Length: 540
Ligand code: GLN
Image (cartoon, rainbow, N blue to C red; front, side):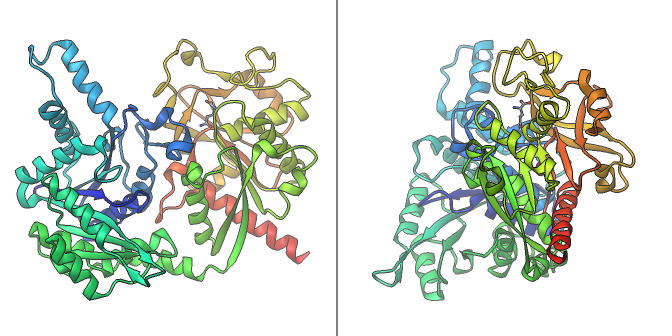
């Protein structure tokens, strides 16, 4: 089958969950045996979100091949289990940079370079994945960030318009809008949807399918109204009511016939509805998980999306351990020696979060000391692991001035240091140790048990600084073991204190490779330890 293209746009307001809908479409098509990929086109000028403050766009997700991307790629991977790559996350900045670099090289032979056709051609080229060496794909799902009507997304819309025209039935446009409920009038309102579709039509795009986000059920009469005002078939007006969990969205979309509508539009026989057994098994577990496990996230960003993949990895691991993760954010800037006991009270386990820069690191170190000395399960990720290492140097090895080179240029006890190859780098953005690297696990360690059969794992990185091997012997002698080593560079990737119940830090980010059907082994092991210890303590 020739590759088909699905474009997902959004209207009325942002935050409707376009990423979740795109991921759900991917999952549903996969369930029918199709090979899919999902890509995101973001209309901002940054080359990638790597240098963006998480307060602006939430977490930065990292692909296996080392691209810093939008957090929606995390949804794509968690829902579908596919690996995305650097070409699954494109920004206006990257498009312009390619075109401008080409112009500087003289490739355009003196032509005037314009938004149409040069920028739009480059967008189309990438939407069609012309440079990708993908194995054959049946569907490419392209989500466009932002909301219809934004000035900045206009070139993307023009590219979609042209592709629709060029590809005919091989392209489908799915538009996501919002149907608000007005309490005072006790009515659901379709006008914003009508306006949003008009806006799309004004750009020459007739949506094939409308997904209406709503907090209340929409009856057939209302769907009919939307269908007739927007020139869309009734069966292609799908509603997406609020769900208790994002993981219910694919099955809800299947019930509403979203995947069937897409196939019909393209002209592919719909056939039987897939059972999605493993997905339903997961949802059953989620429904039946009664017990709660209280997890503290020690970090500096008081924003749900800043630690999205960590939160989801904890949620997934808890569900597979028949529990619900209740996640409490603890602002590390507010943690002091005097209040740490109170701040961490009642938590079964603590995650010390990744991050950059000084802000909040002392609170992370205090938290690491408290959980180490009180034997509370602790999972340090990237900067979190580095803070565990610094805490151990200060309080166990006796180096009061121990620090990371990132925070203190001069300390003689630079237990976390800059990598040799990073020293000469002055450019920001894409210059860190990024993407998946191998790691050899030490046999008999807790992490080795957690991973099961594998001893050579691959995990994704995003950092500049590293455990300083000059101190390795001292750490090991005093009980903090280096149990995961990069075989090529001899870098320490994992530390653990075996005599503690669960005290593990990883230089890599395991949260990027946890998916609905394959929760990450380290998160599984961490949550299990939290639950077991909690149970034992409740009994005693
Ligand atoms: N700031 C640290 C480094 O660059 C950790 C980065 C992170 O937590 N992702 O090494």
